[in-house]
Amino acid sequence: MKIFLFGGTGFVSKSILCQAVEKGHEITYLTRGIRPTQTYSNVKHVCADRDKYESNLIDLLNNKQFDIIIDAICKTNAHAKQAIEFSKSCKRLVMISTDYVYDPFRRILNQSEKDASYAEGDTYGAKKRKAELEIIEAYETGLTNAIILRTPHIYGPGSKPGTIPKHGRSDSLIDDIGVKGKTLSLLQGGLGLIQPIYVEDLSRLILQIMNKTEAYNSVYNCSGPELMTHLDYYKEIAKNLERELKTEPYYFNKEDFNPFPSGHRYYDNSKLKQMMPGFEWTEFQEGMKVWVKHLKSQ
Image (cartoon, rainbow, N blue to C red; front, side):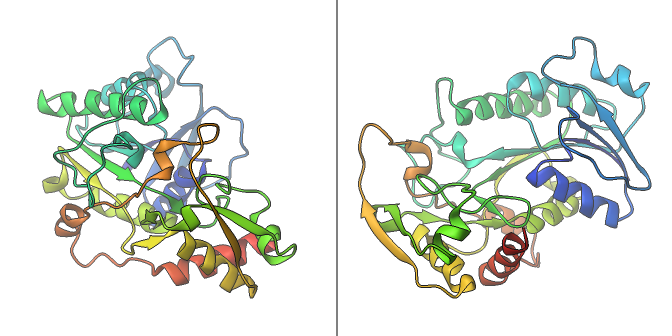
């Protein structure tokens, strides 16, 4: 299959690229050229800044046709319009969105894709929601067919560890727990709920669901299979470092309160599970074991 991928050197997009290569797909991917790229057979790299490129990006590719467009870095409605334009000929588009599109103050537990309240303003989640709406309008009016995947916390090799706030995506977390034995400050003792998804599971899921015509023109919560607390997450890191986890609770204050990651992130995944019966998920303990081993090697 001929795939065009927006992204290819980031945490998620690199995983998609690597797995697509392993599956034998022909891939063209677009990045800004800031991060180093790997050389693969049957892969073409296009370098351009999609936020600054004034002409049609398709011109860069000499009107090359693709079987599907995967947008791993769609952050604005302008990005969504580019992805839609790219997908008009093949009418197949997958967009990676985020659970941040849900209004943090009006989430329902467990939050389904319907009957939802959405983020507003100029936040990351609100911009992602505008991008979603652009794509939803496109598939409702017949311009393309699209799958939107709303992901929560993604973990695994290629990313920094830690959930937010205070210890999110931390450069020092492994040393803080495993070497220095620091006490971590966890919001409300780390009792917020999360459903982490392993990065390689997400990539495999994308490459499988993109072939299901019945999955198109819909939005899916795309969380991992296990519900846990932030405290459970950090305990598993400490376990793999063979260290005792030391924590202390702290509570909301106006100075550092970020409502998006601070509430429960608990989602109804039944729609995705019905679409992907039999999908093999990585157990959190196994995924964390691989991740900590990778982080230690770095």
